[in-house]
Image 1 (cartoon, rainbow, N blue to C red):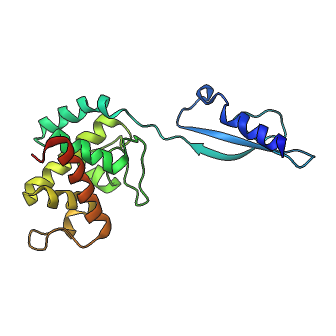
Image 2: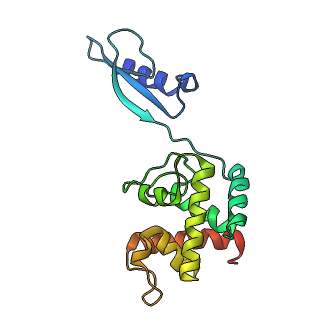
Image 3: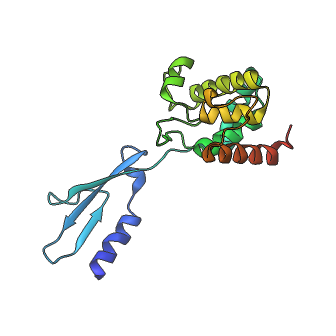
Length: 190
């Protein structure tokens, strides 16, 4: 038992920064003859076998990203604080975020929507934000209301209408509420 604890402690303090790729790492496993299982982020000898691949999501500092958000927000006339709130809720500032439905990047753009917007690199911060802001601008123009535009951004424009409002989809209602709460806290609900 003591050796297993030592092996896990060694793994916790292993030099992860030495990994060739910061976005993921192979964890190796060795079952010793004495029954102790060893885990390591390095292959210590030939009996260590790949056990699993651990993804470490790359995130970006929100304050550093604000220059990009401001640029595209102003360029497409979408309040940068609204865009920041969307990125925070959509991806938590994780550049390589992928939703269970397949939405990608900081602004969680679906592949078909990305193709329509000409988004070739969904995991590049600038192009992803630019495409997401252009899409949000289209939703704002279509619905004339931030709440409805956010609902359309989340659920798709086919599920939102001016007459019926935000669709009765728990995820969409939660999304709109979270974005508006963050937006309001940062901007005073412009």
